Image (cartoon, rainbow, N blue to C red; front, side, top):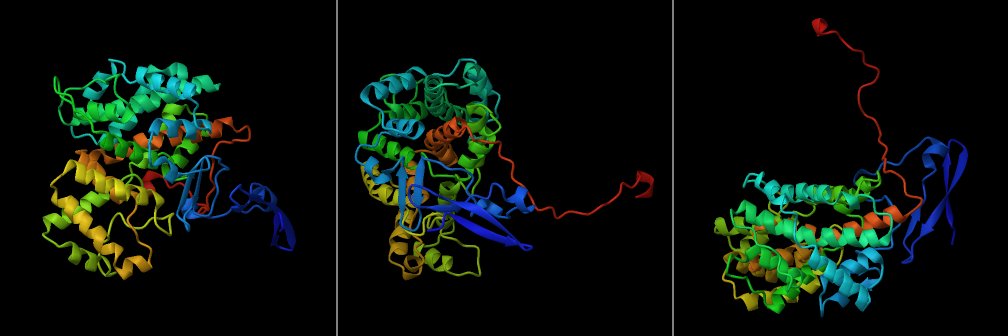
Length: 428
């Protein structure tokens, strides 16, 4: 098998090496293309461009495969532990008992925010989008921990990771309390990661929100399944910002902003928006399914299909059974969840969707589960950010550990005016 390709241009031949990954993916190294030929590649959306080599996550969209550091995602289903997976992603290995205990202790000890940060929350109007607050508060958090701007060894990185992963759930919970005019609830050191987050979200003074183990496991799994997904928009943003040697807090705050977009982290919000429109319009699930097949309207079945997975989204497979258990456990009477379950039932046996492999994706089931838990729609993407944070930290670390890393600087094909001249104001 050839280890390079040839490019012929204007009578000259150039050779560019082929790069092969551990899963036999192949790419062309064109880092010398512009200096050799004066040409650049044009790839809007970067769908055919590899921005880096990474050892964190592997996806095979055709086969429905997702692995974290080589471990199939399905192996985290039985005893989901988000903190263990976070360590795996960041440090490249499953933690031993001492490492896991130490990291858990650090998370517990770092759950509280500096009291002065409460005044920053109070500066936001109650109408502020939760994702805007979350991004701003991660940057603010960096101001209170500026000693972690420079992370020169693994010990400091572990401390920074623990503070971010622990405090983002406090930031998220305080954001929810702020926009709803509720008193802030402090972390309980006796509770585990996910139970503590739900406690800070939903407890009231003298009335603690108690979390069933099955619900805690479900939230752990949602966070795990969102923890990393290769070079998606927000992860690429973290790498782009981090390539300038920006600190970890600033890079992750930028990732939140990228995740905010409806084409990325807002997808599960769109699922609930669709369900609300169906319910408000008095439409049946059967009618909506039929309308979604027609190309002459703007009706789309949200939460089905995925840009990467051309087969069943493996994360959705895992959440499907969890979703059933959670809905049964909570016994929630919600017309929107009833519509969602009917849409799922109809689409899974409809030849139109089956032939096009438009199966329910992770956003469809995670949206249903979070709604059943009582999490409002405008907080869905914030929870996505909590889950994705370990992946962002892992990619930031991987990039900073790479001695060959360079500042990201894409090129462009200029299409603007040519050789125009300034015209004085009185002549315009």
